[in-house]
Amino acid sequence: MTDNLEQDDERIIWEGRTAWMDHAVLFVFLALAMVRAAVAGRAGEWGTMGLYAVAIAAFAGIAAWFHYGTKYRITSSRVQVLSGWTGRVRQDIPLKDISDVTIRFEPLNRWFDLGALELASRTTEAYCTIRGIPQVDHVQTQLIRWIRAHRNPWEPISVRGTPDHAR
Image 1: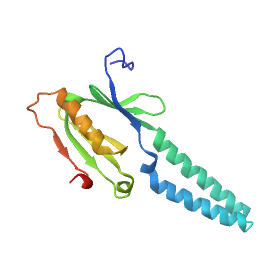
Image 2: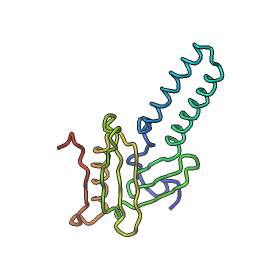
Image 3: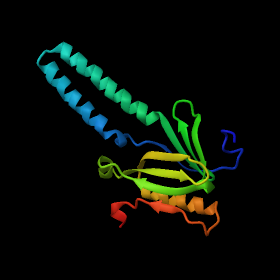
Image 4: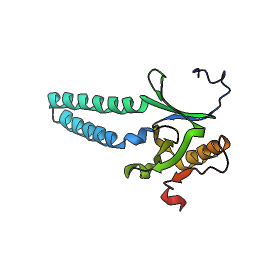
């Protein structure tokens, strides 16, 4: 398959990156370092303030690396995990091969309505996780609809991990 989706008549259903709030713990450390740098600056401890400025830059850099390092794409016929830097396809699972769609919530991400979709292939050992999706239950519903359109309607698709608020 070529990288040009228009040539293959594939439509992009959903495309995105991990949400910034998926890295909330890094932002907590970033905020603490900023407070400590401000306190050090007010006390005239310029060396300490400089060290905290380096820590602030490091935490912001790590968050940016995680956010921009991976891109996710769900097209009308496949799910792709791409490198955010080069655009190279890391994983590619055809929709007709997906056997299991599971929603996972990390404890802190529940507050921000973020979740992860875990997809398992029925033909290979391929396993794909799409992290940091806002309103993940809507993306799951749309993905299940497209999977069913590409498969025998009598074949079951395992769907697990219904969000707490949908029960």
